[in-house]
Length: 557
Image (cartoon, rainbow, N blue to C red; front, side, top):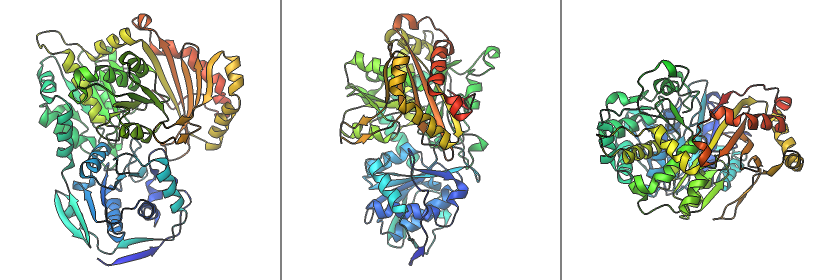
């Protein structure tokens, strides 16, 4: 396989966001665009003579881009690439593989929860040898390198796609390529962390049914193997289970707006009143299966509450944590629900900026066992990525724990969450997303808030008004300007930050949290009523409408 060096001028727009480089497919189709970024990874990340894991979420361009990366890996002296049939792997399963085979790193082709298809989004991210997303130091170095690239290296021979339909081993030039069954390896790992027998018993109850919406993302084959084959759920428990390059035309983001099939089937939408029977448990995952959404019958569990409930039950219900938890962590915008659990358990709680890479350091140092973020990401130290199917199994374990006797009435998801509130108090929570805002207007709004923090604090009787800064307790690195926090005397909060995961324009996110003590939590006020005064205060303090001209958010979660 002869190697060629192809001249390719640098692109100026290859700065990775929160999790890799995401752009429209048409941008990635420019000659040299993908290749330059991949060459920058090889130039920066010392993979010569090493092992690389390669996989993606199956979105449009996944196979073509994978073959290009394989040919470039061979030209750049990589000793071995481990991939999987059709290059299809969930992000958590890639993290598992890197750790299991002690690979030097991974390239994951995903734009996560963003839409796919010829006119939609594509993405590429690099994970390091711990299986987690590359830290800022590495992504900054890759970006710097993209600005200096003049050529990329690639071998001339192209392996046929037929080599990647089943487990297989072959050589590309001097490089070994191994195609492995990642689905069964991932299922094996989870079967060692959870009590599959207890979950199987729950699923066999005549009064219990579940549904998992894979949203035509990569979760489908994993969900079918785990829920249907290993846990004996009926085949129809997994819906939208075939991965599609355009996610079936949907937006593979598991939330109340985009998980339409699940919302309808669980009675969470406008149709709730007219529905008699819904499944007792419902869940969904995003395009690359690292995010999750959980619901009971006509009852939505917010990601912040989900994290807290899992943490509170971990030692009791999940064998992985039989020896207890070392600590808990959440992203700064996530509600303080999990803080109350950490306090009661007497273990540390870490508040980190948004981005899973910040949890990785804490896990590597043994400081935390479980972590999560309000953007539907939950995970633990079994890998270094959030893990949608892990979170679903955690919930099934909790339901199994509360329902050991099939002759007694079913303790439901709603029962479990309400009991949790009456023990730990309740955090009413919402997030307003203003998508595709003109970037200059969004920046101007945030800058204006940064400049008026002292004034806001005095005028609104706040306990705290700041721009969140995080000092990593492990490596002492500092991440600043991570979001404007406005905290009231009763710990209620309004937070503003710009999101780094879109592919164009800016997304302004406003997070609103109202705290109610345990004795009030039982009253069951509608969240919208508890939150309304804080939403109004947040919009006034930020002058959002004046700066952006937006009167309504694009999405409310």
